[in-house]
Image: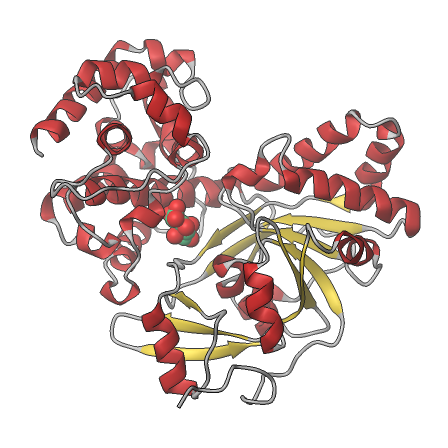
Length: 448
Ligand code: CS2
């Protein structure tokens, strides 16, 4: 017998806010397992309206469920299910522009938050266009203050989105007036977000069916750990997230740099080295002694000297905790999922560490070896067993064209270093960078 669909009539739904106070662009798995949970726990009248961008899939999955969904929390030895009710509405931007504008201009909506991945912050992206159009309509209709809250893995994410929005405004006929209004009535705090959220599988949906007796097409899976560091700079209030585990900070930058370089940089190393070695999951890659050593060395030698460690952080303990989180076999986080969008992720996660170490006169061997693994992943596109590895990247065609079919280490390095969207002149011309990359690429190619 088919289990009934999750909805407010098939489960005991948690208490739900009546009013939508947050408009969220990109209600994907990460948002549902992170901000939506913190917001439910914080309580108050802060319902969320999710706006899907590229497809209606998430909206079509949430709507029949009264926007309820389950978080399957997979710890090393424990699995638990929790139904979350903080999302009260969802819309597909392309098909419902009027509803999007109504939400964006509604004075009750006091926060517009984002999880749109690194590529969503490109100057001419759809998201930046939506923010500018939304702010313009809001100024015209109500002039009510609002906060734009970026929840993506970018250094200075608040500053980046503010600059993109103001730049785009500058190109509008009424740009000066709109820009001035934004300066006065809109805040752009930065945040550091952290929770490992793999793609949901049928096995995860089966766990929900067994535990709750319902079918949940919008279930998400996550590790027990979650962290959120927020710059407390809001234009019109916010949920009391700090009462349920979030941290408020005047300066989020040190936390962002630590997380992006220690956790995400190492995640990318494990993804490319692991995938090439035939490991399906990050935990499998961490269980591979040689790869685990490189991950630990990156976090012990290359990254720490580049960080201003937040006063309340013990970096050695943080490093150990990150490795423990990666080793969680129950999560089944695929190496190829983390390997996605390398052209967007490498500059944020690894190239900053490399530049800073070179500037200090040191050779960031481990960070460079991680870049070399990405180069071989792009160039060969197969693991050591001959299985295809997907190149899911906005620059995929560009990268394939750049590298062609050479397997000559020096050629692979030269051709990929020439991709200017990723590597600047300093790295391209640097003799030590070239030498370490060519050696590492040669080693990886010969290990196949
Ligand atoms: C991962 C991140 O897919 C990836 O690129 O490195 O999604 C990572 O799991 C999160 O940033 C953890 O907070």
